[in-house]
Length: 433
Image (cartoon, rainbow, N blue to C red):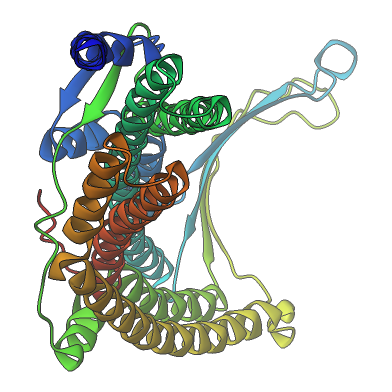
């Protein structure tokens, strides 16, 4: 009868402790921020509107378009004035005043060449901006996925801590009733403290990953931090490798920029050839000479008008260094274009294989290995409470379950990250979750 009362008291205490576990769980986290849930599409829109690097990159397009307008300009005319005192006070030779207008007439299509070059450079800047956003979008998506993964890792560590904390509290009571040794009770308590440290580490990584999101959207944390929401269930795709390669070669913005760079190189050669043509200097002038009252050679006032043309002697054309540099630049860009083309194909193949490899790894977890590990752990804990298992067997089952659970969350993340990398490499994007 006395033993029955002891067991009843033990059960009552365990029930009370079970009610206190959730309260203790709330004290584990020492959050400094209020978490504000945000979905993926809203997050991407914040990136587009607020990211400082993207905003700075947009100015390159504005600068290129301003250069196009500048290329339309003609050479500025030059207006000059001149006055001369011929010695009016001493010799009565009078004064002279002159005004002239000089202008350079460009020949050889220089202005057209400048305009075409500026337009080509403007198209390159637009493609580079698009490529910058392609990489930024992929980077932002990976940061979002990292935060989701870290949240799940934190929750799994928290679950393990709660399980071990419950066992430690029960062992403390069982030791008091003489059912287990002091060493066993102390060991379960030590294991709970060890897992608690892992919980703190996982929580820190989770909060830091949310701070990374704040940096990308250019938001100061203050007392609120963005908390991503979503799951990893929408990252299963079927692709044909050859279709991906063709799509990448047609859609990749960096490949388009490389192709447009070839046009820029050609336009630069055209400009250098145009610059070798002569320019004509045109001038028109008017002078006024006042009345000369000198007794030796008196001269009436007069107003001569002059029109002139100047033709430069292009001796510098024998040194065609600028044209040679432009041609070397064109050859260099041809090689770079071929290299980018090869890199795109290799990159797509590597990303395709990595994604399919991760899908196969994930399939192993979906075959029930996680549920089986959880079932074994629950069975070990139940048997341990009944005195049928040792604490070592429970700890071994707990570690196995923790490892499988963490590997599962990590595999989910790597599969999603592999899809992000594959779609970035192929120049497509349909990520949504």
